[in-house]
Length: 388
Image (tube, rainbow, N blue to C red; front, side):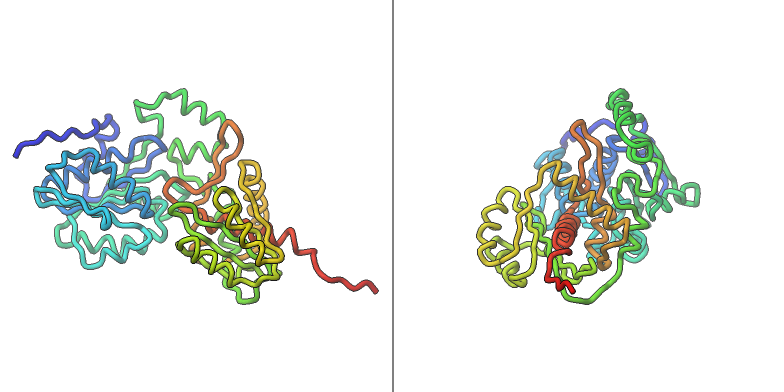
């Protein structure tokens, strides 16, 4: 069976990475350089050569998106797909299986000719994942690995990049300007609008410590600690589509002592919220579909207040959280809250500052924490006082 498969044509700088014969390749590149063309072309070509390919993304949502993009490029006669397992089997005998950086232990016991780690700098605990889960899968076939990402500070991805020149390792660094399909004037416009450290990291691929993070890595770490106590204030972010519902409770000292994160239907979500104390202050996301749910819940809670998100209200909410973290007036345990704070970022737009998680990531814990902090600030001076 002869079939012509037309893949996106790489530009000159992308070809440098694709044609490299090094066993371990690390590519650090600015946004819109064209990382996906490299990873997808190499993955498809390897699978057509009867090789087994593992494609790792930081989150399931990113993996699902790249899975669909690869399938769109292939004639139907060439492959079979399993959407639930994110597996693409080729008629040649090769395959591409997607994994999430959130569960790299799922790779144990497998073996691959090639592993692609996309957006590697955003994978939590990449060092442990590489040493204990990813690297062992390459042993049987003496397989190769490719790390691709925009930098995010000088983390473990950066340390892998610095291994370029060691036996078997080769590193590449490209800016957004290196993509001939991007108008340089657009990049120049971003340079004029963004803080220099943000532009250097996001477009020039120069690692900067938390250049686009509104909280700061040192402050995030300094507020990370486990505290046991009784909640006095609550913040609730309701799930939208594939997001999570997150409930965070803070004690009177601003420490997170209650944390729930789940994906349930509206009936089960309401049941979970109804288990909270009915007489304590709660600030809950009431934007969009959440409005009707909040109205129903407010009949059961004496101090539940809805918060509607707009560009302005979200900016004010997140700036207040940033202040609380940098003044160390709140604390939270290690885990999902800290991880989301670390990848959270801000960008400048024509209408102002935009706060969000990068595409494909979640920020539900950050929002719930911000709502709990607002609840704390709004109610910390409310109480009974006796004047002598």
